[in-house]
Amino acid sequence: MAKEVEGGLRYQPRPRPEWVRGANAMGHAIDAKNVVPLDERSLLDAAMANTGLSDFGDDAWREPFRILLDDLEHHANLHLVGRLMTRSDLLVHLEGRLRVIDWYKTHPEVAEEKVEAPVFVVGLPRSGTTIMEEILGADPKARSVRMWEAKFPCPPPHPDDPKPDPRIARAEALVGLQDAITPEWASMHKVGGDLPVECIEFTYSSFVSYAFSASFHVPNYTRHVAASDHRDAFAWHEKILKLLQSTGRPHHWLLKGPTHLPVLPALLERYPDARLVLMLRDPVKATASVVDVSGTLFYMRSDDTSLNKPHGQFIDGHPAVHALQRVIDWIESGTIARDRIVAVPYLDFFADPERGLEKLYAGLGMPLDGEGRRAMLGYIASKPKDKFGHHDYAVGDDALIASERAKWRAIQDWFAVESEL
Image (cartoon, rainbow, N blue to C red; front, side, top):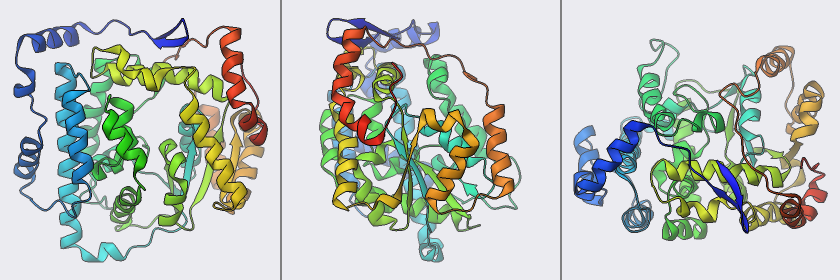
């Protein structure tokens, strides 16, 4: 959990489960780097052996992949359990890439699919993007990507497939490791094999993804991703959606990606008819919550709690401020048309969800039929607060809050976002 120290808030880890402590102690006694290798040749050979495939597609992914691996070895300071998780995850991403490329080769008609007018929920982390995706996903017309589809998209699910798909259980077992290693994670961000996921979960295999930077101290990779135009990542993003819808096109895709915020022009270049739902919540409260979230993600894989410093400082909101300020600049300059983004203040929406849904659907230019309205309002009514545990985090004293508030004031005023602290 986060606690206040001089200069801001810092992540303070909770005690690890005994089995994790024991495994990591063993890792200090053995040659963990050679026992659990993360080098390119070992990973590629294993992925090819596991799938019987060898074509990874174009080479655009290789440079960021190599930068990532170098940072994982030289900067991430992984403990043994962290290395095991990381190797497993990288193999899932590589094997998924091999299978997707092979599927397109054997099913060339998939490339002709059209992804039409997708809806993206975007916003700063901890601003309500997850609950909004869940609510809008209750509309029977919407389709989201589930964790098992993101990890194992091939073959694409078919309505006639046996239920439940066995890939759900496999995905559940993998993501359940996070809760087993850091049980407090479930109260911060619930994941599950059949739950909707952020777009980062299926752009991992492009290897241009902010998700790696959220979980590891990978400074060179983070700079590389920030300098990227993200065209390759969105091309892979579309490739996955085309594949998934090739056995049944949805009325509309409902997608979520807080990490899309800094690259919205690239998203709209790939999906010119996309519609954006921008979630807005008191950014001071949201960034305070991120202290615990980012700290926990790092602590899953490393004992060095200082590594999350650039991501988990309450007072270091500059990247987030810059991201929202650029959204304002894009709107004011006409780079992004005002009618492409529907801003949804969190408190306003939940003060009157029915009115909020009417305004949101009108802003998106989508009809709100009775079935969808009932399903979404029913979901809100049945959603218990703190279903997966209460996320308790510090927010700092009045002086610290006031200092942080000053950084956000102009943005809060522009979007008319109410303060919660």
